Image 1 (cartoon, rainbow, N blue to C red):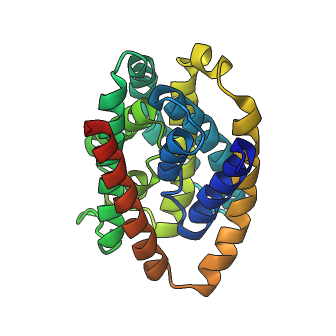
Image 2 (image 1 turned 60 degrees about the horizontal axis):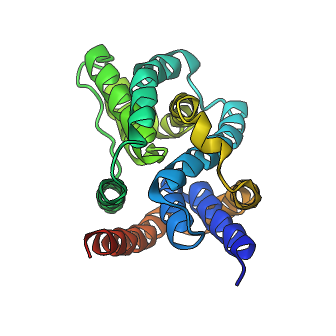
Image 3 (image 1 turned 90 degrees about the vertical axis):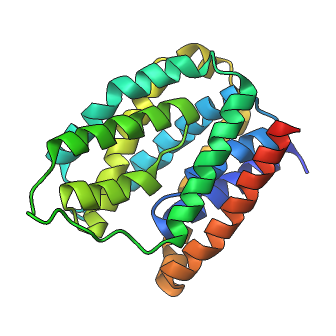
Length: 249
């Protein structure tokens, strides 16, 4: 199987997961780029940021048209992550490859565990917004995006629900704005790395990922979201275990 074919398949899978679950698919992009397409961990995180940005922008447009994006609070949440995302993006080039891989495996495992838990529904008891916690959550998400090249939707959505009292559909839509801003901030510090990437593989990856989101939404309409999440979580745990074993042996 050629690298181009693998890129097309991997992109489609990432898109399907994003479309079906509203997040989590980008966590598969980095291991796919490393183990299927031969990217180094550093190059894979940069390429993943490009893929995340493209797919998030596409999904953001659809959610905005549906009225599921709160621009002002979303922009404020995203603003807290801009500098951390940029700083983490610049630091990623100096982090040992093994450390990046282990850190990513840990985040993938955390993502899987989050998906196996009941959806976050808690709201602030007083019904108000907590600016300090919102800023802290935004900064943490920016750091994660910048360093590891993941969108972090599995962290952003619960944060927007619990800290900013967003409804779930609005939290998903607004998280795409946050993810896009953080990804672009991190990419701004990785322009040198991005120029040397294999665009002949990244381009098709992005194209099928975007197409896959549409089909993923159709799957979500027919299959229980909880069932889909559990299946994906188990796959993600296996991927995390494989990456961790590979990095430590």
